[in-house]
Image (cartoon, rainbow, N blue to C red; front, side, top):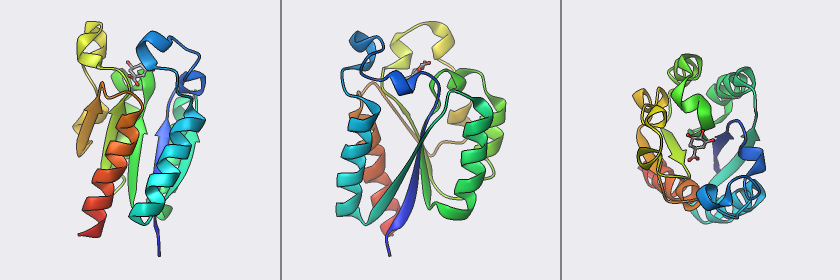
Length: 146
Ligand code: DHK
């Protein structure tokens, strides 16, 4: 049976493709979902997608994933740099967690250099554009097949 991967996107990522395309590219979140779904089928993984502009919604999604998902891919957006609550929620999840940033946060403002989520993440991908999501999915495919 296919294992479920919960893919979570935080604030402003609903505007992907329209928002600062020079930083975040031209692909939309629907494009990301489509690429992940297609790749997931080849890896035996089913992808569930969630986006919220609200911290509590993301936390509720992580809690629900405790019962349903084998792994999490999360781009918490700006909550990456501020949210102890999302870190705490991820610490309740037992499977692998991968943190994705579309842009190279280390090449940007210093406030983007620190990530609370990285204290829990099993791996971090930054600066690979939207391809970062499928790279994380490939790694989950490898880990969960072991
Ligand atoms: C997305 C955001 O919305 C920013 O707040 C982060 C991240 C970077 C990204 O690169 O995907 O700082």
